[in-house]
Length: 124
Image (cartoon, rainbow, N blue to C red; front, side, top):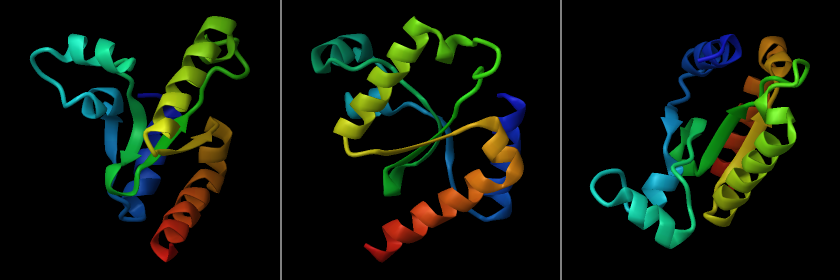
């Protein structure tokens, strides 16, 4: 877990927002982990993708995007494309995907936005 993810986990806990870490949404959508998962994923066109954080009952995924200033995996061509495919699959399954940077976590903007998204979901 990155330092930004650790900090966001603290913010979420402080706000009593229940999340699941490393939520395997691809596996869940393909019938859950366990025997035959690879075949089920292949049949559905999914991969064993994970979210950094998830609130499954609200279908809210939270991703802390790192490497923006260091040419990390998520900002190079192949990694960037793979992330877009992951987010596309998640949204096709009905997930809202909130992406934030480590700077947004550190400043408190990420937790404020997450709380706003949750409030909007409760009002709907």
